[in-house]
Image (cartoon, rainbow, N blue to C red; front, top):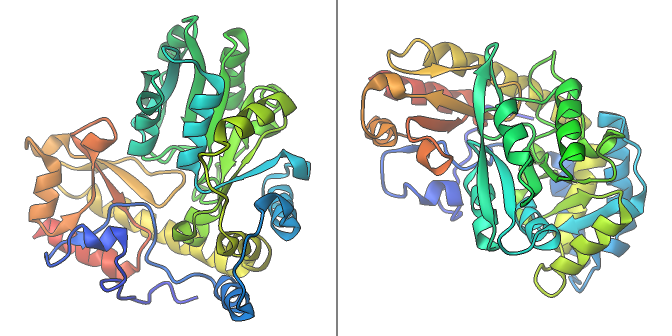
Length: 375
């Protein structure tokens, strides 16, 4: 569990590193970490490959994977689910696109909290739907939904679906149970289905914050789908495995039907890795959380020392939403890249005066980024 280890990914065609190939720019953008997977995950993958036969494995029949998910949700989130509520998907991005297809008709409106990560912002348009942006505003030192804007947008009869990212990417906020109940009340009064993208839910860094799955709340059980994965927490995004938890049988059937013939099965190695992550990696998981907390605290302190930059401490994720409006430059992304640091452009998330910095990396990597920014 050496999170300080510097691993050379330059020859692996990693998406994050290919962007700045042959440039002196540290890639700190796309949301995967620089950490080696937990040994138990690597062992499970080695053992499965050593078996030698990689034929069809129907995810719905992979009982150890479903049992692992139920075990994890019960232990980590006190959410006790039935195994038939689980639908495997090859990523949350296909899942919320399927939700758009399943629960909306062309011309309907989909409410989306912004800023948000690019594939989520794109989903309504890809499905011939109108996206309605719900702003995120600063409230008491953290970013939160603009509740008045949400109430107004939800009242539109054409609004059918609300896609929420919780914990929020890129701002890092975690909705409290009271905030979720307020959200549930809006959804119930205006007959909205909630699609809750909770892929970062196991990366809670704030000791005072607690993740509450949307589908766990009585007020949302019958009108929500909860999207989760081991991919961000255990750095296995390249294996393409995630899942939806949908208690309502009608919603579950509509979701499954919308995916038929379009969305492929989760591959067998993704199933195996998810099973191992949720059953045999607790020590690694806790150590990573502490490492990320320390990285977050270091980055918040250092960024807020830089004239023109500011950063509210994220409650969750390994992503920092940095306000660069104080720099007085037209393109903050170019300012960072000229310093030799490659964050995600805020424009891709909905605000060009911000950047998103990924701090899921060895401390030396993070320290080098700060040195470059200050140079």
